[in-house]
Length: 395
Image 1 (cartoon, rainbow, N blue to C red):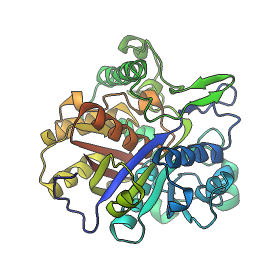
Image 2: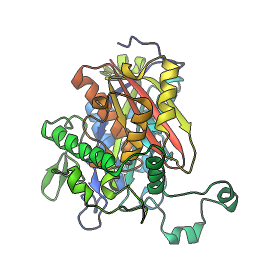
Image 3: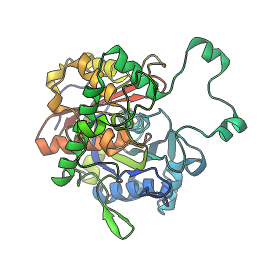
Image 4: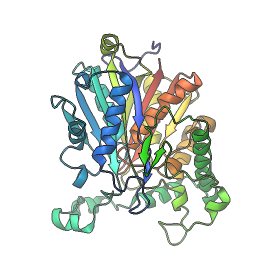
């Protein structure tokens, strides 16, 4: 059981299970989930979590789910719709939230807060994003019908840019070379391929039957990716002087993820086996133009609150929205790089934005057990200038 003092007030919160679907490319002809409704992706996560834990669905007291584009197929509370579609009890409530790329991680933080405060004892938190059916950037017709999110007053204060340009600004500020970022991207694929071959992803990925085959990996992982092969790609966000390519960016894809959270009382009552305790969690805001630097102050805050040093953390899952995000974080925090994204990251595995946080948490929990390690930190950058961080302690 846990031995460290948590700065969080209230009851202990345990991660009992973590799971996700495979991640498929958002491609209209070749994408694995091109014919799959996002309800089905999230519903599969619900089924797997309930089945693994061996509990009745009625034991779940709330569903907290992240989704960055809750319109179209993902509208009208997809967290609730996917639950009802599975035939589960309508008495279980649900909510959908949007904290950009950190949505699923924030869902887990809010689920944990509900348990720590005594409101609930068992919560499923997660995320879903079908970026093929519901694009991350709203089509022009949506803006024409419903208006723009940024007003003239906001534009007077901030010269907003897209996330790719933000990644370029980070490369500028930390003087990151194209070669350094390509090597980091190649590493992501290399580690992801090795993890899949060793079966290290089997504990967290739901086998999915597609086109007569059972998929247990992710569609965007590219074996044989090297720094040399990535060097041939064109930059995509700056026509001149750019360093970010499709290869050093996370691919757009589809998927869902989730974790089952429980109080100590629920663990005892239902005979659950806790896998990790949420030791601390935080969210920060940063400059909304450079936007993707949030993991740096979020990590600093976790270390300050817990009195830990970066060397005390055994594993890090830092979302690979772009190579520059993780490399800048490494420059500032100076962790052991061999502890960072040890099974590859979003550059290889994909980044269904509203779901990725659940994937990172599930990976961290599984890897802590595999390594018989104690502490893992999960942190993400988020569009709009936000950063999330969760510190997990294996139990």
